Image 1 (cartoon, rainbow, N blue to C red):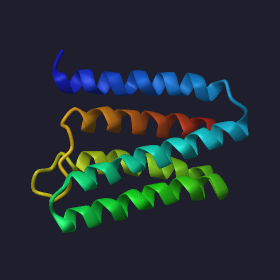
Image 2 (cartoon, helix red, strand yellow):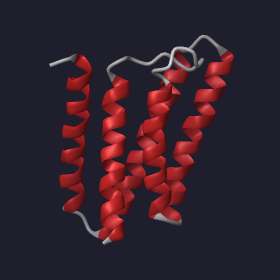
Image 3 (cartoon, rainbow, N blue to C red):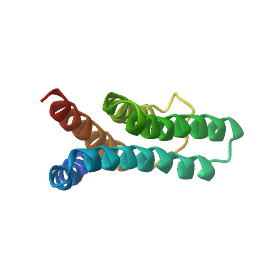
Image 4 (cartoon, helix red, strand yellow):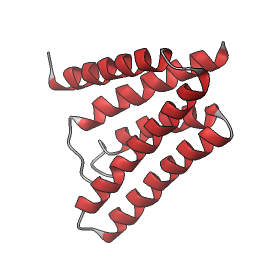
Amino acid sequence: MKPVAKNILVGLLLATVTIALHMSLSESRRLELTSFLLVLIGSVYYGFALLSKHKEVIVIEVIVASVFVAMGVFGLWFSPWILITGLFLHGLWDIAHHNASVKLAKIPSWYIPFCAAYDWTMAIYVSLIMLN
């Protein structure tokens, strides 16, 4: 199996574990867990920003990470659809780091497919439970 496929598989497996935990919780706890997850995965980019030696990259990464953290908080307070949107957009943000022509923080190559697979699986799952 190719490394990218393995990383995607790990992201899907972790999402499956998260979904199992999610399903065992009450509706309000599900919302809190999803909010926490978005805050957590958004915050990872603070760390990536601090590893950069370029001020403009640090600023971009900190701003975008802060947007995801805010979406996690506002999604808990106002609407789960903000959380779903945040998860989907975070997957796109992961993919943006794969494009070498865009000046963003360098992140481990395994993290991009892993995290995008996790983010989008969770976004789809949370969307489906919101529609029921």
